[in-house]
Image (cartoon, rainbow, N blue to C red):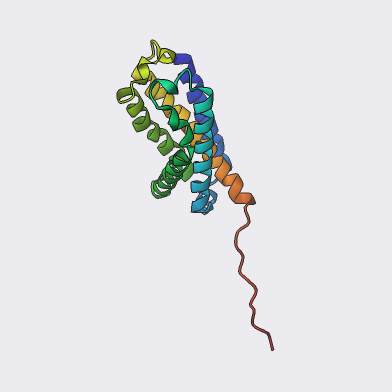
Length: 175
């Protein structure tokens, strides 16, 4: 697990550093708020759908009922709201808001994984045999920094190519 944590930590630090270098603070602040809701909801909803289908037998079936696979729209709404909350806070903290966004997203992994470990008992699943809670928390921190980094990258790209409203031409006849 130590090698995995090291690899994911380097990947997350690299991704966030490159994003912060390429997307300055003013550009990040200019991204429309609803873009984060849209991208967060779609990214996490699609991601949850894929994970449930790929890892159902080896992971999810041990602690969730089968109907959960069909609740992707709930995940989309939940993460759209989480993305908005993280963005709101990231813009109000000192420092680069994109770095704040990814760091807050990484912090968001802690309560999620706390619930998984201590309420859903995911460490009892054969997939996690021999893994301890500390390793899960450290890995998840860097893992989520990458995921929220991807969300911020997609928001930047979508915002760049999604047309902005322009002022309508006046309908008054000129004399």
